[in-house]
Amino acid sequence: MDGIPTGPRTRGPDHPTEEGHEVLELERLTRAYGEHLAVDEVSFTVPDGRMVGFVGGNGAGKTTTMRMVMGVLAPSAGGVRWDGEPLTREDRIRFGYMPEERGLYPKQPVLAQLTYLGQLHGMSAEQARERSQDLLTRFGLGERLKSKVEELSLGNQQRAQIIASVLGDPKLLVLDEPFSGLDPAAVDQMSELLREHTSAGVPVLFSSHQLDLVDRLCDSIVVLHGGKVVAEGSSEELRANAPLRYRLTMAGDTGWVRGMPGVEVIDLDGPSVLVQPEGEEVAERLLADAVGRGTVREFSRIRPTLSEIYREVAVA
Ligand SMILES: Nc1ncnc2c1ncn2[C@@H]1O[C@H](COP(=O)(O)OP(=O)(O)OP(=O)(O)O)[C@@H](O)[C@H]1O
Image (cartoon, rainbow, N blue to C red; front, side):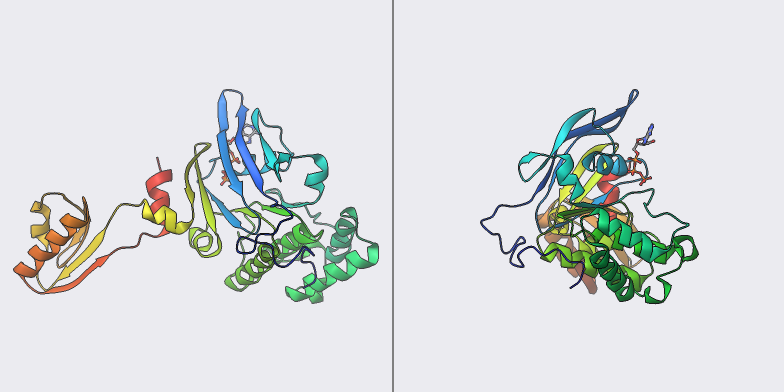
């Protein structure tokens, strides 16, 4: 478990402790560039032991928000609290951050660089080297310890960047697109690494455009659009607010569905139709009608994907 925070193992959403929750709270965080509001009163919480996915289209304001959390950028208004108190410089030193522009120097050997970063987080040179080496080895870079960062493949550079962000036993992780460019095996390894941190009570906030991955990994999701939070919750909560949709498949043509009051046809392809009924009663009426008209092969409620929900709330 090298590189994993040493906090009590019992912390986390299912095992709250009495020593308080280390929760990150963004309160009406706002950033303007000239007339343009890049981030507009963004409020949400990253609770201890939770993994929060931050999604939104290009230019939605994710990076700007994360930079303000990390103190790289000053907010125009609003603030950030940690453990109920305004965030300080000292708090931020204990946070792990993977910036959009990445932090590692291309020309320096990867182990030497991580060792140096570990020392900046207060470890001895020996501790820092040992922990860096263990993590690099665990994630398949054991043979590349002396390679310069620029000599690694992009995916391996990304692994090293993620390792760099967890080196100092962070109290919070803020990661800007940590999974971009990783192959599926690396995604699994890095997700496991992040999960180890949430299990130890660390709140994790990461941005991503990979919605399936966010759906799979995150305890909750914040959707940003045009600098504003347009949806927030667990994927189940987001789904509960999504429109009711059913797929009806019959032996014959389903074109007759177009004439049914209260039923919007989303997609119709001969014997199969995707519909959005106004409510459960309308769906039941539709099924009864279908049974009266011929053989029903399928009538099922469609669980929307996160991508579909995202398109509903975040595509202009
Ligand atoms: N230094 C800057 N000067 C002026 N405008 C900026 C600056 N940085 C960001 N912006 C603007 O702020 C908005 C939010 O950008 P930001 O990089 O936070 O979005 P993002 O959600 O991270 O996008 P992406 O997914 O493309 O990385 C955009 O309209 C961008 O053009």
